[in-house]
Image 1 (cartoon, one colour):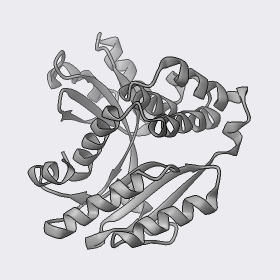
Image 2 (cartoon, helix red, strand yellow):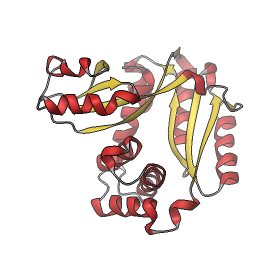
Image 3 (cartoon, rainbow, N blue to C red):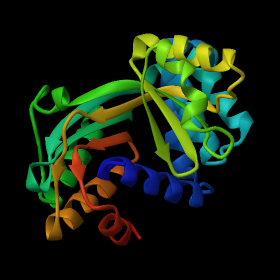
Image 4 (tube, rainbow, N blue to C red):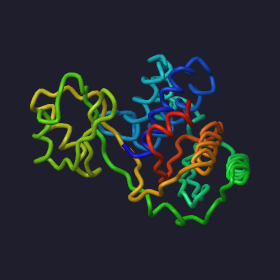
Length: 249
């Protein structure tokens, strides 16, 4: 697992532990609302919404709050129309590429806070397009690794799956966005129970970061992730797993 993926795993565990905080639920609800607004309220036909709902479930967000956020996005309220999706690109310590996805009702506030986080932690904002090319979106289908093995998922290859990855007690089937539905249907057709299917953003290449730079990179990512308007943060760093665990503790 890459350093960035490992950081994401640690971050989500931290988020689940702090799930009672209104701040976390507010961010999750905002992501669900915008996903439903942009792609409709049908989870099976909207991978972005499916991903947002799955994150909310992992954080133990109540079902009624999830449904309310979907309803707002599909027109049951005016709040969804006021939220804007903005992507910021920049660089962290050691030249690490950083992609920030924000959902905000105040562009000026979001820009100022994100710029401040970059400058405070040894990074800088870049121009649009400066680092986006380093990242790509993929489809990811998650199944229970304690119930299934990689051999059980062979049928997904014919449908377009590219890779199967172990992520703690989960198996993630990776594919192109265009084959996400076909791969999921192939797995379900063979009796495989799918826990979730959605989108992930991954770097095409990574930068190895060590020593003090590793700590600085994590502080920058944590600072960005703590911003109210920030939905997701992606970076192309790679830190040895044992070092990352200590830094993220």
